[in-house]
Length: 142
Image 1 (cartoon, rainbow, N blue to C red):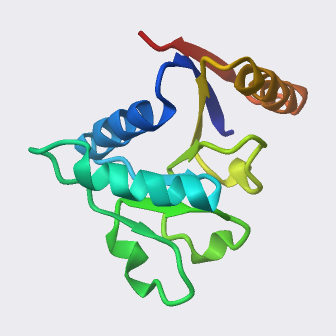
Image 2: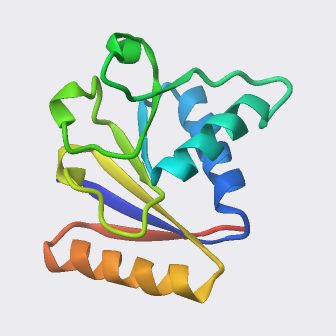
């Protein structure tokens, strides 16, 4: 069963996301990041400039993305075509809603910022997972 973790009170969701991806990559985990397309573009840029000493191989999904299987970090605005994704280990959701197909992943990580609107939407996602019986844990971001 998919394990769900909420990372709460991130000052900068983008910065925290980059740190999580770096940690996952250093632990050989494979990550799919689901976010709106404008956030994906910002995250792609942030991963290139996040650290001067770390390179995190990543790719955005596209119709001709045959090389995705080689990439440990995939950035996408849609995971509706799960069969096209080469791995289903960790789903990092930066969207406001539950990501379709989340149940195919071993782990789901939800990052929640400091804004009240973000917290309200996160509570709805929490309720969604809880009503379906998924184990949920929380992590306070320091």
